Image 1 (spheres, rainbow, N blue to C red):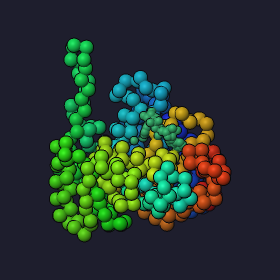
Image 2 (spheres, helix red, strand yellow):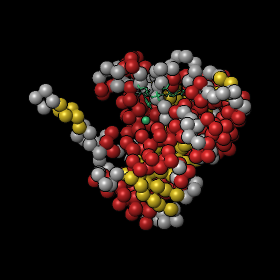
Image 3 (cartoon, rainbow, N blue to C red):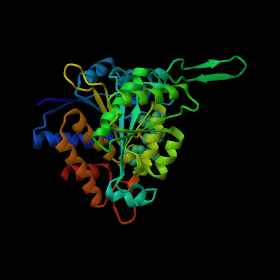
Length: 363
Ligand code: NAI
Ligand code: MG
């Protein structure tokens, strides 16, 4: 089989983490005849430096034609003052929009070997396996108007607009119920209907979608701020959490700390199934950013990027056994006591990015 992957390593620790995934791809092609065909392109600040755009039109086209895109991370202080339209994040937002990646899957899984070193009590996180489903193409990150207005009296006004339409809420709710059926069969929807009109609509549409074909799934609702508290107090009460773009961004970062480090957290972003082929456009990326504070030192944790590749095997290529094996290899390497600095604890063996990647490939 031919499996087309576009690799977009990006900036900072993005390329360092992607290098470890490239080893896995090469090993799978050599040992398992996996047939991955990879292309690589620039995105973010490195793309801006090369040609003045955060992603080129040709590379957007390649992404649209690929079976899946693997994305590292973008950004860094070097590009803090480039024009807003070509800032590093613009390349990622452009891909999300053009590929219509409205469903962002962010699992928070606590590997057994890391439960004891979590910032929370081991019993709170041990065996944790929840999925935060974040709406990705709507809400306050895209709504218009979006501007800074000069009020002329030495004051300015910054404006962002939270907008959701029925179809956007329907399709993310349906995705949540379908994913829940393959897991613990529970969905908790989070919004702030007490202070936001878009929250009132979100609540109504999720409830209506549930009534219309998903009543076998347990549905609860929670205000998003209370949800943040509950996520820290007793996260195992949840199975799938479905929420909007902004709250999903924040709640998934909270969930990150339940599992030890941002360096452990993968994500997948999926589009709607193609009517003819059933194939979804998909982009896989770690939750973390480009980590400029540790970039270039060879100490970044590559597990978030590697686990993102495992999600790619599972969701884009239906290589479920291979995905299971890769996730088991990550768990086994942690059981052996190997730790990058971000997850280091007493008595464990500190390793760099390359050693961690090599150990996982070897397993
Ligand atoms: P960040 O995720 O890059 O880093 C936050 C902290 O976590 C840092 O102390 C970093 O060293 C640590 N960390 C993150 N990933 C790690 C890993 N794999 N191994 C070990 N430690 C890790 O977030 P921050 O600092 O807010 O943003 C840095 C840059 O990244 C900014 O330019 C930001 O705009 C960009 N960014 C890009 C994202 C993306 O490409 N999707 C997402 C978030 C931020
Ligand atoms: Mg974030």
